[in-house]
Length: 129
Image 1 (cartoon, helix red, strand yellow):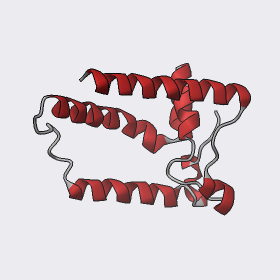
Image 2 (spheres, helix red, strand yellow):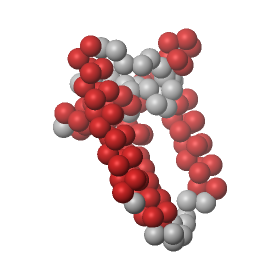
Image 3 (cartoon, helix red, strand yellow):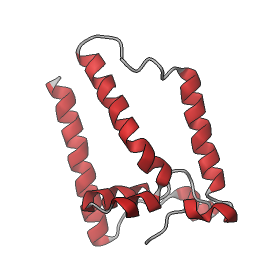
Image 4 (cartoon, one colour):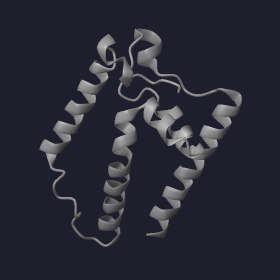
């Protein structure tokens, strides 16, 4: 259990350092899909979204990537449940995330990636308010 908590704290710490240093020196990783194809992928804007959350600018974070912003609490809950079930050697409480649900979530992300590249849905693109 302590090892898992240490890993989580380490990842969060490294993420915060990456966001702060990256913002200060403007050295974030680029999105290869955006750079080479000129298209927004479902993950475009996530780094800026996380930095906005770190600064407490939640509406701006939502504008950078609405799908990931809305999904973030569910991702955290799922991961915490996963850690709990592994440390207690029990089955996960979130049995509803069977393969069919994962396929549905993947389809949602693919559809989101397609929609944010259509002019009519340009409000889904990463924007600064």
